[in-house]
Length: 296
Image 1: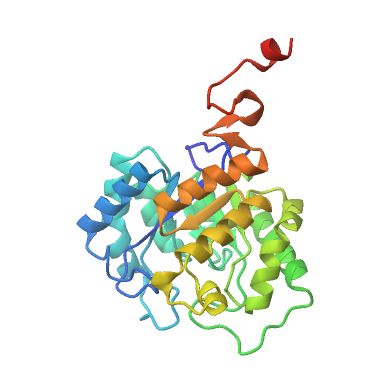
Image 2 (image 1 turned 180 degrees about the vertical axis):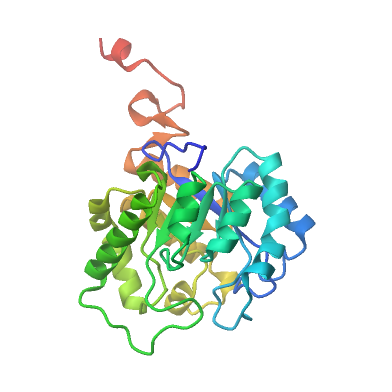
């Protein structure tokens, strides 16, 4: 994403969540201090994260509303510090073009927009910055969803929305190979609709973009299992493994080390790679072989 390249045809990308907020639903306040946030970001890279996603405005419905200036104040120092210390892409989770412009100048190379480019200036800011973007489907707006879900067909509406928004990004100068899509688990969906989206991930491939699944420790998992957010690790693991098996390219997670291991094992099971090496060149003892020489 951006000037960084991740070969998503050979391995699943793991995006580590770094919330620089006092009120996110799972880890709110834990990394609100910039120094602690940078320390956690560095640890995520050591644990195997391919992307660090820094967020300064919680989508939690109970979180306080903030403006772009406060969002930049929260995420700016963290983005600047991490971009100078790590080789992986730094993403920023924002729906504000003003914030996006600021963090791209500070070293971010990917904007994760949970509103699907709702800010009229967002696409052009990303295009001018030669950055990447993850475009998410949402029904309603963050922190305020409609009382009733109005879909013709859930997946059909998601696909149409994402097609329109990715076309907008491309027309604004964003390179096609720097776009990924997110069906927006839990954003304006009922539990049954979320579960159906996981099953139907292959249908999203029609759009031709890498698919990001962001379900880590979400309420949907808690409702299925009857568990609080701190107890949803196993449910998250199941969702991510299933999503990879159905064709997801990137998983967005709080628990980086555990989910990197889930991703690597899932890749092997679906026949992608073993630690980045194509499956047909791996023996069961882990050694690399020359396929042509072996078969010849």
